[in-house]
Each structure stands twice: as C-alpha cells, then as structure tokens.
Image (cartoon, rainbow, N blue to C red; front, side, top):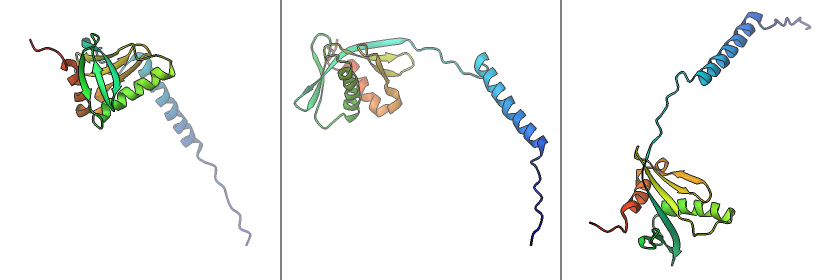
Length: 150
C-alpha cells in the first residue's frame, strides 16, 4: 500500500520562458507609452459657441434664463429628466462647496459637434454627448431658445 510518489519539479525552461515573456510585455508597453508609438492623438476641438444660463426651480418645473434675465425655456414638471439630472448633479456640487445660484452655468458647443455643460464656480464639466443624441438635443435647443428671430 505504500507506493512511492515521485514528484517531478516544474520544468525550469518553461518558467524562464514565461518570465521572459512577462518581462518583454512590460518593456514593450512601457516603451510604447513613453514614445507615443501606436497612440492616436485627437486635435483639441475649438469652442464654437457658448451661452451662460441660469437654472431655477419654479412650481415643480425648471426655468432657464439667460444673462439678461430673459426666460429662454421652461422645463415642465415631469419632463426632461436628463436635463434635470445633469443640473441636479451640478447643483449638488455647488451646495457641497457653498456656492449660491448666482453664477451662471456655461453651455458650450465645440467644433467637433460635442456639447458640454460647465460650472466655472466649481470646475465641474460634463460632456453631454456621452449620454446619446436624444439627451444632447435637450441642451442643443437651449442655444436658440428664447432668441429673437431676425
């Protein structure tokens, strides 16, 4: 019943080859990272248009006004959930940093077609295109909302 069990060591050559492969991979990744080889660089987009806007709660809705105090849009209660969510997040950061509602938010349109919402008072920046074209359209309408047609 007592049989001798022979334990064979793992082949040393396989261990050396695996360690060499790991080291080569790390060196290749580091060289690529430092040299920029294989990295795609996107040119920075230029700011095409921006609009300073105030958002204020009004009777369950959200009133959007420009810097002159003109109402440019009213988001009725129960609608525009995406816009409300974005603004709620920005307002939460303002509250955390004890910033009032006086400073405007800046809606920006970039040369590559992207839209972003920025809060200069807190440094928050949200790239809106990440949420899909339907959600971006809600903010895109705010560029022309309330403007006089000439």
